[in-house]
Amino acid sequence: MENHKRSFALSNGTAKPASDLVIRPMADGDIDAILDMENAVFSDPWPRMAFVEQLKGPYWGAIVAEHAGVVIGYACYLVVADESHLTNIAVTPEHRRKSVAKLLLERILQIVADLDCTLILLEVRPSNREAIGFYEKYGFDLLYRRPNYYRRPIEDALVMVRHLTDNED
Ligand SMILES: CC(C)(COP(=O)(O)OP(=O)(O)OC[C@H]1O[C@@H](n2cnc3c(N)ncnc32)[C@H](O)[C@@H]1OP(=O)(O)O)[C@@H](O)C(=O)NCCC(=O)NCCS
Image (cartoon, rainbow, N blue to C red; front, side):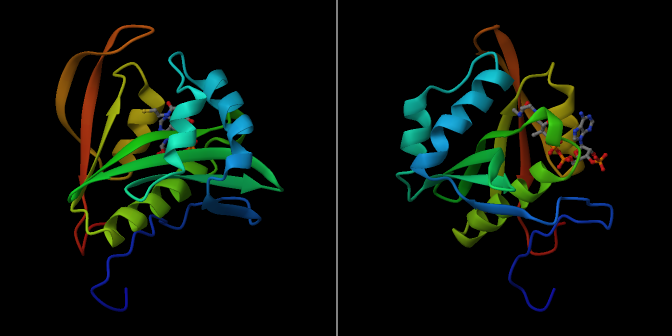
């Protein structure tokens, strides 16, 4: 790292993303494909309007991972003062364990750090072991448990946090 500016490269030498993977802002034209993924991946998917609103920032936003012209993952964030939230993240099943989510998270950490956020929060279902494994790998710790947070099916949420400091990686 050349100076004090925070950098969120999460690579540890084992990353293996496709070389033609592009991380870019979500656009209107992505929403149909994103909705297909969202409906396939989640039991309580976001409606179209939630994604439409994501594109109207400036204190929230969404990015996608595109491989060979096809969107294979996406992530959304929200900023409230110096706190940020990772509000959504998903990768298509056939592209998992290839560091796609890592690259999406890395970009969001950079975006919210540039907006002077000092931490990033998220909620996750306790039953979602793969997501919890991903978040733990990238420095999120359990903050508290929020009872009956989710619907379809009803489930508690684990609230996790990662502090964003100059030396954290
Ligand atoms: C969670 C999710 C986004 C991870 O995406 P991904 O692109 O596969 O993640 P990455 O390849 O970047 O994973 C990086 C690391 O996270 C951890 N991880 C990822 N998936 C994991 C799993 N199923 N079990 C345990 N650890 C896992 C691993 O340490 C992994 O590194 P490794 O592959 O070298 O072992 C993906 O599984 C997904 O889309 N799940 C469904 C949607 C969802 O649940 N989103 C979260 C809602 S809160």
